[in-house]
Amino acid sequence: MKFKGYQRPDGKVGIRNHVLILPTVACANETCRIMAANLPGAVSFVNQNGCGEVEISRRITQRVLAGFAANPNVYGILMVGLGCELNQADEMSALIREKTNKPLEVLLIQEEGGTTRTIRKGTQIVRDMLIEASACEQEWFDLSHLMVALECGGSDSTSGLVANPVIGKTTDILVASGATAMLSETAEIVGAEHILAERAVDPQTKQKIYDIVADLETSLEAVGENLRSAQPSPGNKKGGLSTIEEKSLGCIHKGGTSPLMEVLDYACAPTRKGLVFMDTAGYDVLSVTAKVAGGCQLVIFTTGRGNPVGNPIAPVLKITANRDTFIKMEDNTDMDLSGAFDGSATIDQLGQEVLEEVLRIANGKKTKAEIFGFGFTETVMKRVCDYV
Image (tube, rainbow, N blue to C red; front, side, top):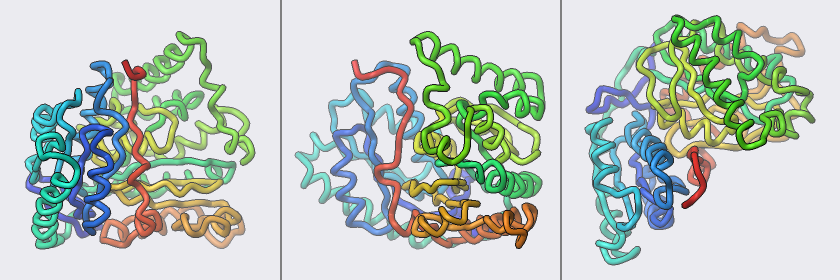
C-alpha cells in the first residue's frame, strides 16, 4: 500500500502542503489570522501562550510550536511575534531549525511598525511561499512515512463496542505495513493501563505506562482533586458509560493488538515506528494538538455523541458507530460504522473501509472538518502553571 505525498527537505513526507503563519505569542494571533484568512493555502492558529509563563510551561509551548512548524504537512513557516514577549523569536527560530530545514521567515510587529505594515510585508512573504509550495509535486510513498493520531471524543457505548475496535483493526493493518499510530490521553487508560502495559516491547516501556498513570493520580491528589470528578464526562454518562474504567477499556481498543513500542512525553516525536502512546490530558483538543506537534499527518477521531473539532495542520477524519449521531451530525461526521450493529458489515470489513478512507484522505480527499475550515481556534496547549 502506498500514498501520494510531498517530500520535505528534512526527509519527512506531508499529505498536505500548507504554509503556516505561526504566532509566537497571543498578542500576534489576530495579525496572523488576518493574513491567513486572505491567503488560500495558508493556515494559522490561536496561541494562548508565549508570555507570562514559568520556565517549564514556556518550554512546553515552544515544543508545541516547533512541532507544528516541523509537521510534514507544512511546506514553510512565517513566524510572527510581537517583540517583547517571553517566547523570543530568535530562540524560537533556533528550536525550529533544530527540527527542520524548511523555509522559515520571521516578522516582529513592534519592529515592523504595527499590524498594517506587518500584514503587508507578511502577505508578500507568504504569497511567495505559496507559489513555491504549489510547484511541489506529489510522489508515491510507502506507509512507513505515515503517522496517524488515534483519538476518541464525545464517546458513548457504541464507541467501545464498535467504533474503537474498528479503528483497532485499521491500526493493526497500518502498523503491519510500517506506519506509526499514536494513542494518547493518560486519563483514559486509567483502570486499563495493565492491559496496555502487557503489550509493551520492553520493561522500560511497560514501566512508563504505569508511571504516567501514577503521576497523574498523585498530582491530582496533591491538590485535593480526583480524576473521577471529570471522567467520565456528563456526555459520556448520558451515552451509557458509567466509570472511568469502562471508558478506558473502550479507549484502548483504538490501538488494536499491535505491540506498544514507546511512551512519549507531551508533544514529542516518536523515535520508533509502530504503535506508540503519548502522555497527554484526557481532553480531545489538547490531545490532538500534542499529537500533531509530535508529527502526525492525519487524525482518526471516533465519536459516539458527535464532535465537530478539526485541526489547522492535519486533516481530522470523524467516525461514529451511532447511527442517530451520524444522521444528526452528518455535517461533521465522515463515516458511519453502525452497520456492525445491524449485521450488514463486520468489524473486520469496516476496519478495511476505514483504511481505504485514510488512504483517500492521505491522497488529498478533504474531510468535513477541513471543508468547514475548522482548526484555527481549536489548538490548546498544556500549561503547568497559571500566569505569573
